[in-house]
Image (cartoon, rainbow, N blue to C red; front, side, top):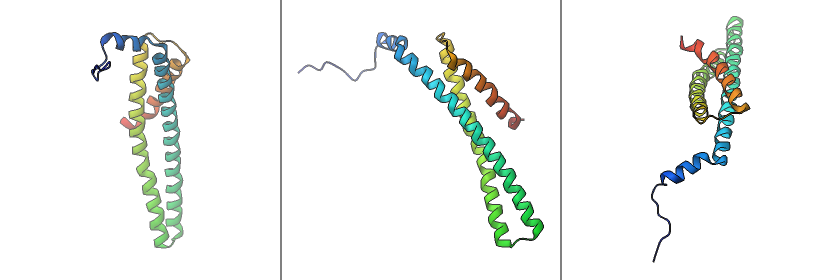
Length: 137
């Protein structure tokens, strides 16, 4: 019995055809668009968590000033602590998403791709770096 296909790795000719395939190029542009959207979404999420921390901190301070019930105050402090924990997690996810976006963009630039997605990705990278940089100092 003769087997026509093997489980061996693709040959160099097959790999090069995949790279020049318009579908793979579109997939890479699609990946770039997805990664750009991911970065934008995480930036929105981060800003939302930062606003939530401010709101909960003000609420906790108000409760302390009014001499609220110790149990209620403790619960509010727990809410504030949970909100604060989300900010570093969000920063970490944003840094990871930014690295992925930069890698995908570099790959596309290396293959001399053009398109609106590339310009959008570059502006998103600039925006995200402005958000990430202040926390690194």
